Length: 269
Image (cartoon, rainbow, N blue to C red; front, side, top):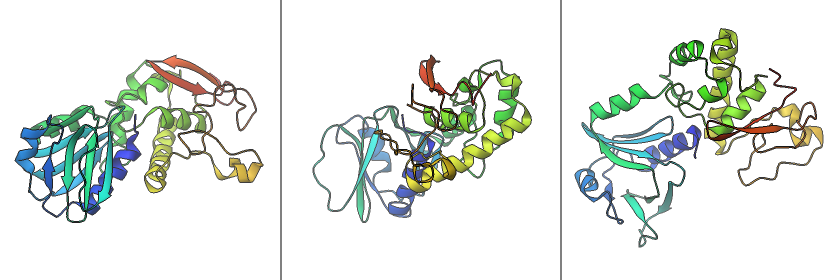
């Protein structure tokens, strides 16, 4: 599932290419036809991301909400438009580009009240200037759930997925099974600050890189990572491979139906 930086990159792209202009909105697949007709031809006021949610604001009570889920994706191409390929849930046509949305978990039209309800039920997003880490800390500090679960709970903190979860805990030397109530305020502040840096870098470069300069292949002489996800990471999807810092094999186990990765030495309980 795309992590928060991907949705913020999409929001930035759509803001650049479509916002401030009338946008043609349709549903070649047919599943979004009625809602598309209500915003078709309206000016897109802004595009923004809330964690893993994308919002296209066309006016009061006219907000298109997209959640990509596991299989959703946008394609974006220059005009002229071409015939839809596959099951296109929503097509947007702007002055210079058009975008097709396929396979989302959600593509729906929300009222302002429904958007407010969405904002209320998800945690602060490290990529938003209006995020309040105190809200996440209040939930973490009272919980006996493992920090590895809490970081993936979108009602605690939004936008963090499996990669950022594994990597920020490694960078902070925290075992993923440590309970939230055992996390100190200093540790939480370090987690939040690190997520802001890592995720902002993800928005900038379009991939997740979490390895510090002194541990990169060009600094250590090790081979670069070969993985379809790209990016240099410490533990994510490196099961059985030596830790980049201590050489201990990286461990994995399932936690809350997701694979968890950590170094048993660098992240000792």
